[in-house]
Image (cartoon, rainbow over all chains, first blue to last red; front, side):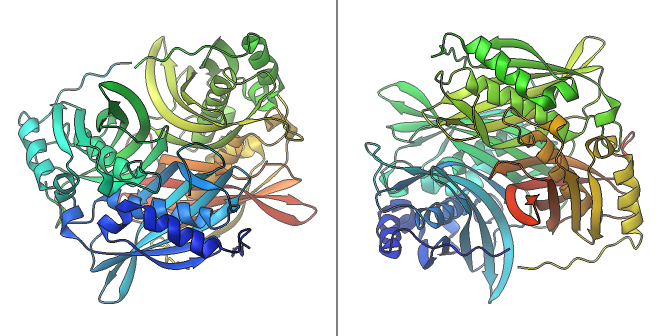
Amino acid sequence: MTYNFVAQDEQFEEKVRKSFARQRAMETLGITLEKIEPGRIELRMPYNEAYTQQHGFLHAGIVSTALDSACGYAAFSLMPKEAAVLSIEYKINLLAPAKGDSFIFTGRVLKTGKTVSVCLSEAYSENSGERKLVAQMTGTMMTVIGREGVDQ
Amino acid sequence: MTYNFVAQDEQFEEKVRKSFARQRAMETLGITLEKIEPGRIELRMPYNEAYTQQHGFLHAGIVSTALDSACGYAAFSLMPKEAAVLSIEYKINLLAPAKGDSFIFTGRVLKTGKTVSVCLSEAYSENSGERKLVAQMTGTMMTVIGREGVDQ
Amino acid sequence: MTYNFVAQDEQFEEKVRKSFARQRAMETLGITLEKIEPGRIELRMPYNEAYTQQHGFLHAGIVSTALDSACGYAAFSLMPKEAAVLSIEYKINLLAPAKGDSFIFTGRVLKTGKTVSVCLSEAYSENSGERKLVAQMTGTMMTVIGREGVDQ
Amino acid sequence: MTYNFVAQDEQFEEKVRKSFARQRAMETLGITLEKIEPGRIELRMPYNEAYTQQHGFLHAGIVSTALDSACGYAAFSLMPKEAAVLSIEYKINLLAPAKGDSFIFTGRVLKTGKTVSVCLSEAYSENSGERKLVAQMTGTMMTVIGREGVDQ
């Protein structure tokens, strides 16, 4: 099934870029925003030994960090102008060791609602141009409007 | 319910410390190993602005990183001497904004099996000594023996 | 950690009983409401061969059905008088085969919020009085007010 | 991404049919096996008031029951001849009320491994021929060989 969403906020791309730029974790981890479409996000991160687990693979939690942001911004791109986004929960399956030159993270909205959006995201490793699926996430995101301390 | 587990490997504490020390992500993020008991782990991380999301809270993925390691090492502490541990999957609920001076992460084994172990872990924020539950994780961990590239 | 919740609605017990009685699935499956406290529910179901999987264990989905209701009503017990409850998502780990004379399902609220509540529930088998943990669930429940077709 | 799997066991279709026929819960709930391909399963269930929750929608746990079987048999279709399948865990997001004349459940393998397989499944309602996505599941399934009491 393919889902084509229309953004409520015409400035969705700018809104996503601004909020992403405020996620200090993205900058620190070297995660960059590659594509923004209504309900779809693509991120990239080069392999970084500083964030590995005991076997030298990228730590599952770091993969989660990128996938959670991919999910969150996919949902955020479809939210009304004044809304902020918060993660309610997510679930990740680690499918293969996260080893590679770099990693691609894609997030897409499965269902968008007034309060709750559900997104799927996938992590791929890239080795000399070859892509391999390494993790899959399902996340539930909340539309937050007018809560103190939670802006865009 | 309280579960009291007995470690198969008498050197479980040393084994956990060695493997944890090899997780470069822990050192980079400033996550330290506070307690090791059979089937139970406690980690700590000071607040670090470099790993925040857009509202200045610790990024949910960074919370996941610590909780995944807490789960993994709780399971690993009960595994046979020659085993390595890998995360199969985990699920996290974000219960409150991860803001605070520092964070405590506790992991404990719910069920241990020959191949698969299930663990629960919880993240607490600390503000001037007051603890607050900010996230809860359930994780499934795999006992891996004799797989190339996957040692302790 | 022990959580003691206070119900907003003094009639919470009656409200839960009425709504539970309207879940036709509970009656059909023979699931009964054993205990109601603010934020805590206990259900029971006798073993029934009609709901087994291929090895004669209670089907994981039937275990889910009881655990989802236990989660939902634990959350519902703490909701305002006029609210209805809907499941957003849940995650279950199957820890041991669901075989036994009967099954006990306990649900308790971990965190209650204005819109979203998070609950934990556990399934136990009973064999000649001996209890064994067979499954664990984390569920996210939504407080719904004023939505057409979604009453108590 | 499209995944095309090849079954190890040429008799996979017969194997799945036989095991499915032994799931008493499927017969009791009126769930039927519509399609079997390597790594893909489709099930169907007519609406049945006996299995509803308090608003007259199909109970989320019943939706889970069908999705869990769809996941399990999708994984089982790719397993070796002598293997049995058990669910380790699954996670379901309820996306829309499960109301309709009947329901379609599709399961497909995302990743198959020696011990662990990961599957995605989706539930659709059908109303006068119109399909709507009502739930999405991710499940982890285990290949079990030579365990007493756990055959096909």
